[in-house]
Length: 143
Image 1 (cartoon, one colour):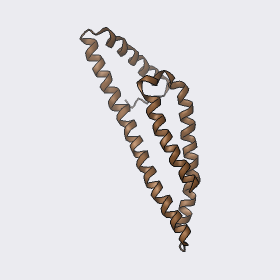
Image 2 (cartoon, helix red, strand yellow; image 1 turned 30 degrees about the vertical axis):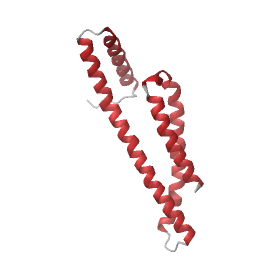
Image 3 (cartoon, one colour; image 1 turned 180 degrees about the vertical axis):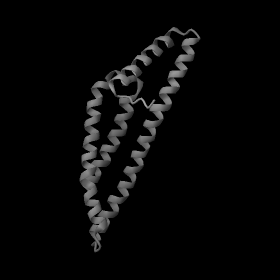
Image 4 (cartoon, one colour; image 1 turned 90 degrees about the vertical axis):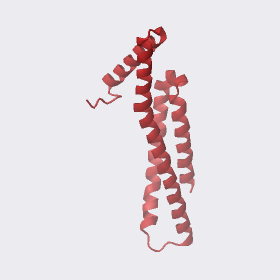
């Protein structure tokens, strides 16, 4: 049960950390935070990989005692919650990566064509950032 609590705390931290590190106010710290976020994700995967074999063992066991049955139920309930949180994070990432970025880009482009000098600067910066990400392999070009 301790491993389950640790994983739950890590998921919560990852969610908070994702929101914090990706907010516009903290983008200047992205490179610094990226390593820490990667380490947290690796730690989460390691803990999950420790929990899953135990869960599978209990799941396959035919004659569970009351304690094992309770443990199996707790782990299963927790894993359903973890799956839900992972799907939530995945949905948020997909929405943010493809929806919000494009929406912001086209709003800036419209404002820039209307003559807003601040939008022109932001648009140029955004184009440079996208180009850098594309060239470095951080962004995948499917075309």
